[in-house]
Every structure is written in structure tokens, then in C-alpha cells.
Length: 593
Image (cartoon, rainbow, N blue to C red; front, side, top):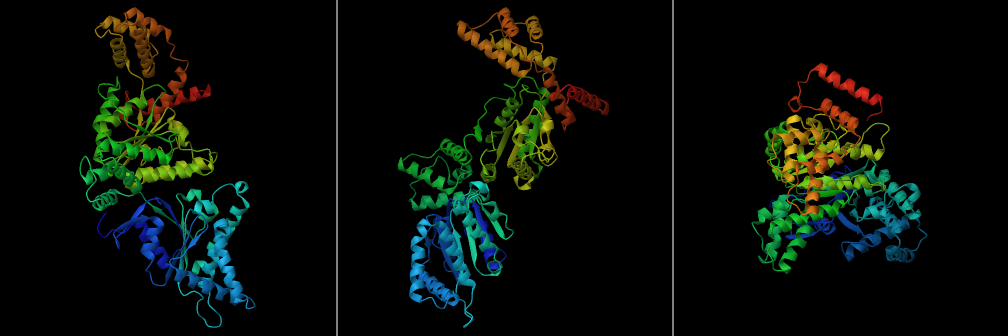
């Protein structure tokens, strides 16, 4: 963090308040974290940080509403000032009311708020109304200072849900908020409200969609902010922190963590008097991301198989990956690719091959398993968390298997949640700021069902890569691989030819199944090798499955959607493409999809 660092979200917040451009503000994102105040060289939670930054602003008074219903005033003097103004305002509306009765009413209102959040919201609205109103007799404002009202946990106070699922209190608070933020007097007035919620999708959409409610996102800390906190913490601990390397390396490796997580990790290390190592940090990052998104949403992968030694066949594709795909990702910058769609029939080895490519790159691999939730509005929340985490990482590769079922279409027949999710992923892929940082790999056997907007250039459509079944020479490599597993690495050409004939119709995943069966036979029989006849008997017992036409259809779709002629093993001409399209139409006429 630079010495004179200014948080971008704080600058945007201050500009909105000072200019009067928006009086209703919504802070989302990394709200449960620590923030640095250079005035007293300290870190504090968000609300305390805002209070410190704004406490000495001339003509402003900060009120904080907590979820337990309490309203916090900046000082006893400020409380008395608001009380005096409120009583004066109430008297102007009802001159017959006695000041003692109004004083008691004010005190009763504040004392009852812990049980009545609806009353809290209404009282805060009244404070703003009092603040901007002038006494008709004197022309003076009832309250000399403008209010900045900070409402914590706004998503609990004004929750998003279907109307039928909202309680009477929820509906009442939504109505109060609508009246408050839509009041032209408040819109044109000097007071401001800052709602704090982790996600805009958790706050009631009737409030979020108001044109005068401005959302400001608090990002996860970048490397400079993490480095500043580590240095500050170590200095405050008198150098007691032990690291495997430099503070700069620690800050770089901890990408994706917030400062609370860093604090906890450093506290634990000091408590046990153990040096933090790189493995500890990586494990902490993985755990934090899983905790943020959910175990059923994201999985960290650490592929270790090698592109040259463990991926059989696919020579054309491996050459492309090593000479073009991997170098472009490593280079980063404007020349980097946003992502790729990987198409090919089921069982062709798409995931295995690209995991090997990821292993060679040596960058974190996240597999998104299910980002669509059954719960109301939860899909949008998951995406916002995902976006926040991904943009905080230095570089990451995203695997989305069965991508056609994860995103689907954006057509009129698609569900609103599906359309929103697909649209957000598309925008994130196209964002030039993510080039070289986030690489999307959309793997699917049904490339034709993937949204056309995802398949266009600038998104995954930069590269649509086909993964095809092995050609005759590559089939022999698979057969040799199987024989070597059976303890027959030098079986000879005739043995290879014989097993090749016996495994006609096999594809990569079937060969992998055969190899597993051979390993099981060796283990169960207590042997270190099988005979060729035994291998052929195992192969003859395996039926590849009645999916030949489906796989052919998927192969044709991979070919016609491919964006690189060099990845197709035949010369691509208009007549060849026409033949593929005719065959697709013929298969579809027979119900093959």
C-alpha cells in the first residue's frame, strides 16, 4: 500500500456524498475486513474506519444503526443535539405537544429500538427529515449538521425474497426505505444513507433497483495492501513474525485472502512459535476461497500428470498447446487469451489433457462445479463472491466442465437466473482488465448448446479447440500403453496389431478403463504380468457402450465449431464443412442430439 494510499471505494463514496450526486449508497463486497487509517496509523473494521475518516468533517454528523436495533451517536453531545432538534421539529408540527412529553417520547424510542428494527428505520428516516427541514419562524434548520446514516447488515433489515416469503415487518421496512430514498426532499437534500451488505443480491431488489441508489464495491486487498498490513503487523509485534521468505513473497502468495485471514494466520504462527511456510499460505488461500464459495461450488485442483509423458496420442493438439496456448497464457498482457472452449465427444480425454496443460503452466486451477443455486437469489451472490475472489488472484485458470449445462442459453426460453449468470460470465470474460489474469476453460461435449455469446471472439470463442479420437497410429500408442501396464512392454508389433483389432471401437476413456481392469487383475491374481491372451480376454469382455452415433454427432459439432484449421486433421474446405453439416442434419433427423 502506498504511503498516501486512498481506497478507491472511499474516494467514490466521498465524491458521491460531497457532490450530492447520490444520497443513497450501497457498500458491498469485502465489507468484513480491516482498513488502514493513516491519521492514527491503525487498522479498523469498515464502520469504525468510516467513522474515523469522517469524524472531523465540518458540518457532518455520523449515525450508525446496528443490527440489534441500537443507534450509535458519535458523542453524548451529538445525541443531545439530535434530541433537541427532534423535539423542536416535533413541536413545529404539533405546537400543543409539551416538550417534556416529547423528550420522554424520544428517550422511549431509543430505548425500545433493540427489539424493534422497523422502529429503528423509521426513526432514522425522521432524523433525516428533521435535519433537512427549516423552522418557518426563524428560517433556521432544526439540525445544524447534515447526517450520514450508516446502516450495518442492511440485507437482514431489508432482505431479498419473494413477496409471499416476506414477513409483515420485512414488508414494512421495505416500504419505509422506499418512501425514504424516493422522497424528493431527501434526494435533493444534504443528508446521506450508506447501506452495508455483502452482496446487492441479498438486499431487496425494490431498493437496489431504485435509480438513485448507487452501489460501490469494496474489493479484496491487492498485493500492496497485503504487504502494508504484513509490515505493519510485524512492526506492531516487534518483529516476532517468522516467514519462510520475504514479506513481499508472503504478500504475493496470499493473493485472494482478506486482512482478517492474514491476521489470523500470522497470530497462529506466532502463537505456536512456528515459521509460516509457502504450503501453509497456499492451503489457507484454498480454504478461504472454498469457505467463501462453498465446497459444492469450487474445487482446487493440483494436476501433476505431464503433457508429454502421461497424455497418450493427440500429437497435433499437444503441439498446439505447447507452442501457442501455453506461451500466450504465460506472456500475459494484451496478447493473452480470455479463454477457450474445449469441445469433443464424451470420453475423448478433454479434462485430462487440459489438466496436464495447467500442470505445465504451474498456476492455480479452480474447477467450478455448480454455481447455480436452488435458493432464491443465491446464484447472484455466489457469482459476486466468485468475481471478487478471482479478481484478487494474481493468475488463475478456471475449469468449467459440462459448461453447456452450467450456463445454457440467453434466449427467451431461458430462466432469468440462467440468463443473468451467463451474461455476467460473458462480461467478465470480455473485461480487458482480466486479460492474462483469468483464463476460462469451458469444456463440453455439446459445444452447439453453449451460448453463442460465449462462443464469440473476445470470450471463449477466441479459441474453440476440438479434442478428437485417436487416429490409427495413435490407437497403437494406446494399445502399447495398455500392454506396458500388463507387463508386456516388448510384446512386439503382432501383439499390438492383435490387441488393436480386439479393441476396435475403443476411445481414450475406454482404454483407460481397460488399463484399470488390467491393474485389478494383476492385484487380485498376485501377478506382475499377464499374457497377451489374458489381456485380450479382458478387452473382449468390455463393451464400449451404445453411444457411437452420439459420439459421432458430438465430434462433428466440435469440428464445425473449431476456430483453428491447424487443429483439424483434414483439409478444411467449403465442401468438407458442407458434408459435416449434412451429416449433422441427418443424425438430428434420427433424434441424435
